[in-house]
Length: 317
Image (tube, rainbow, N blue to C red; front, top):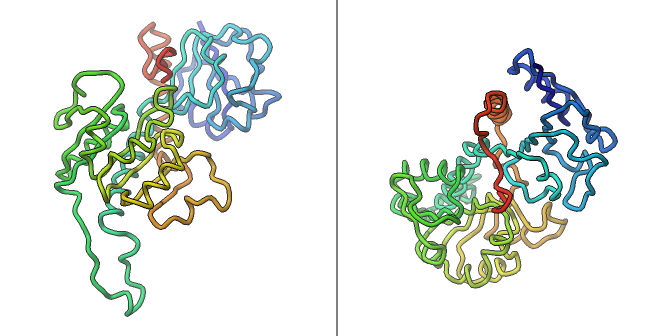
């Protein structure tokens, strides 16, 4: 029996996805506009939601389309977080995210940010004779990395940091060991007091929103470097400014609150801040990894197996 899978993807993405599908999977294009993207056919069991939510009118306050959830049994979100989606999405029996699909490029971004910080790049580049001078650099080797949110991205960061002879500690919502050789579990407060480099890779939930507030920032070591590849709202932005103006050594943000930042925002001009436009997960291989993840889950779904990346609706990720 054929499996009807409908999607909101553009033609290029849909074509790349179709290349790995078996013949008995029928891929139905809904289009990429609000007028067509939610016209789910009655025989469809699976909906693949466009990650570019703005193009299909999707936002947290969007009302459910008439007839939702139709006969859908499974919704797949190509993103990793679920904080931007309306609650009615999760009325479908199973919802999955592309968990771990961006771990490689994001972990490499985090290591690049740490290396840039300790090696003072790009400030050390000599552009003329006046730039030919000594700079005080540092090593990652011997430093302590604290990872807040030890999921798939956190594990990928830890793997790379250990290769640089860093001491790695981590924290996550569930208690107990992290289950990763060479990484020690530590409460958030102790982690912030200990780490030279802190990477935020936690999901945004009611519990984590604003978790890096003034009190948390004040715990961090003088000269420490904070990197956020999770969600902008994990950090109290105004408290961050006070910490940067006092003891914090620097911050690298791939995500911000608000996002995108408005023109003239202080984060663009503060000398201790580096901001990128939420692109740490970008690479030429990202699409292939996301497609492979979905192909595997489609096989699992058709065989009645447990899906990878299934969302825990109570925990919010």
